[in-house]
Amino acid sequence: MTPISCFVRKRIFSSLSTSKRYASSVSPLATLNIPQGTHVFQYGNAPGGKKGGPVRPLLELKEKGWKIEAEEKWAVIGGGKDRKVLLDLLLTHHRLSPPIPPPGRHPFLYSPAPSKPHASTIAPLATSALSPPPIPIHHLTFSLPPSPTGEFSDYTARYHALFESDRHTLLQTIKWILDPDPLHGGKKGEEEARWATKAVGIEHLLEVPFVGLSNGQTRRARLALALLKKPQLLVVEEPFAGLDPQGRKEVAHVLGELSNGGSTRVVLVLRGGEDLPTWITDVVEVREPASAKLTKAEEEATRFEAARVGSSSRTEEERKHEGSGKELVRMEGVDVSYGEKQVLHNISWTIRSGDRWHLQGHNGSGKTTLLSLLLGDHPRSFSLPATSLTLFGSPRRSIATTTLNSIIGHTSPEIFKAFPRSTNLTIEDAVGTGFLGIFSRRNLTLEQKEEVEQLLKVLFPEETNAGEGWSKQKFVEQPPAVQSLVLFARAMAGTGSSQGGGASRRRKELVVLDEPFAFMEMNQIERCRRYLRELGGKTAVVWVGHWEGERPWREEEGTFDSTGEKGDERRRVRNADFVSFGFGWSREIPQASRWTSS
Image (cartoon, rainbow, N blue to C red):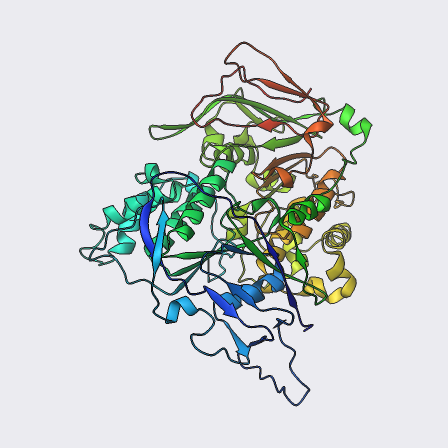
């Protein structure tokens, strides 16, 4: 492997909130100290090499070492194997040569030293019988599939009848984790649960069933559980993926205050770009070819903006007919409630062929429920009258689920978690399952094989140019970023000109992309955005995402009008590539608030 060196840059520290602060103490010793000239190897690989020749190090720190001082706030940015090398270095998963003398690579963990005063807005957790001893290092990641078995899981189960165990609230779940005695457990730990959930802004969700939490709310719950472990070093990977802007701000503030508190030091692992919190003081990134480069903070934002795709390539003729195509989905006055909680109220929405929509809203606002109606996954979609919901001109109950799956492309964090990883599907097999919207291998027609090949060439240019054997690799063996991009290609399978297969096959008329870029690297995201911008034909696209910089279409490409009486939230978009369909924190959308392109 080619030696890799570090790219390090400084960032000006921004002070956090001026809220009430709690006194604590922090060791002045460094969080990390890797001296200049250190070589990083996998365990088991000796510097002297093997019979086949010397072993090349995974990382070389030639020009300078990597030191994280006590007061510095660091983030590891980038993606792929390069970022993982730095992550594993933090987690002590790699061997260093020459060995670092005591106190080792994490001095503050192993050497007692006088502490100096520090302050944080997060109140310390009082010690109790349930409080576990602090752990040295905890790695909290949101970028890996959760199921170690790789079996398929039904991601639509959250909408159906709950088992008794599924009714456990967030509070009960945390109490069982803290007090796991099978006979008498689950009764203690409420104080700890309220402290941790308050710290991450979800204390109001303690009585909500854990299975009913949204993707973003679940991430905050996992962060709360990590705080209860009281780690001395908390390494958080992709903490902002799937969070709405307000949620990102809150979680970034919590992590910053936690890092500022002294008892726990925080290092973030991010893609970079617009998800970098303002309190981060230093960033380390691995770049190839091997070279150490220092830049100013402003250059990161400049580099990020320069990498974004420019203008839309949708033709004037395509844009002229937006909003006037065949009606694919119509909702009129739709209501959905879970018990006493009303999630959707009086929703009206029309999607036509060729439309481009941007669905946005905060975590828990009802986006996923709305999409489940559109996809036909929600049980309520079967009972709604045709006057309230029609899919492709028919009531949901009159369309077979297999038919819907074959004409709607779909990817989401839930599909990423649910997609089977124990069936030995190859990369091209996984993409090919998208033609029918299934989760197992099927024989493809010649035209479908050609479309899969073309999709992989466009979305994986480097890999496919390296040789024909790449697409035969196992899907399960790929890193999360590659798996996510493969599932994006799966959602797009059937939208190209080579669908073929006879009159019995219907083309993909609608593609629903729910946070499709959650696990991707920046260069992969740009390929997807470019692909979507160049997507022609009559396929409608609904894109869901919280990051403005990831949106495939720009606001200035259309003309926005705000109309209606005071309190009427109606917005109309003309000749635009997307419509922003949002939900307020608590307001209801009246039936007249129908947002369509015209």
